[in-house]
Length: 330
Image 1 (tube, helix red, strand yellow):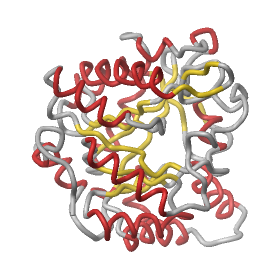
Image 2 (cartoon, helix red, strand yellow):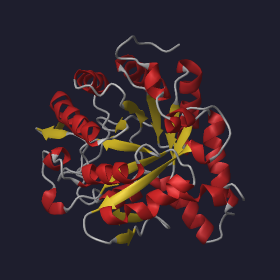
Image 3 (cartoon, one colour):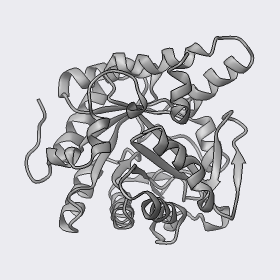
């Protein structure tokens, strides 16, 4: 059973918009099951190929319509925004995350101006795109400091909510951040903003191409094992999820996806809460490159996506999302 109580837990938040209700419907594979990640860059009229991710690009703000139009026409319920921040804007404190003119804020405003509520917007809540050291939190004495990081994440969340973000997605894995963010949203009259918690985010080797895409791979110092979970653990994931539900999470993310189908199934069976799976960059690149080299058939894409649904995922974050109509014809 779901644990928690009003007002931290408001089940109506998930029912407010059509795109949100479609996200949490049960079973079948269709465009409504997908969230499309979009990488954004500074500049004008720019689209950059990401070398490590075949068929995936970074878009300047004035080119966003090129990809969002496709998502809307294909009836994809939501896009997820990930910025590549210029090196000169990064620092140890990740202060660009709190700049109301940063890439994510500009992208939210641009999408909302053109599309209103035709499509949902999900925003990453974490500092790794903005920090010079590439970590999701602040560092003091060579340690990722939890509580001080949460204060920054609260301000980042409130800023994104003010700009018009529909779903905040804390991916940082700091203890206690969901409850603090939920209270701040309630107190600031953002009661309808949903929280998609990366409660089961593992310290994984599958993130490499994503870190290329957002420009944090070369700057990352050390690893993230002190805050992301050990891939050998499953009970720990359930403890993390129970805490985040109690603190006010509306939905749960499992990341990576394919190696953790057992976690998806366990969460769904135990908590009966909407569960999302992230088919991460490494999974995407492995499949795409294998298809290009004719090592496997293109039908492997569809097979991999159905696997998430079979395990119990309500929705899938996938770089294949904008090609789902073609994939469903395989």
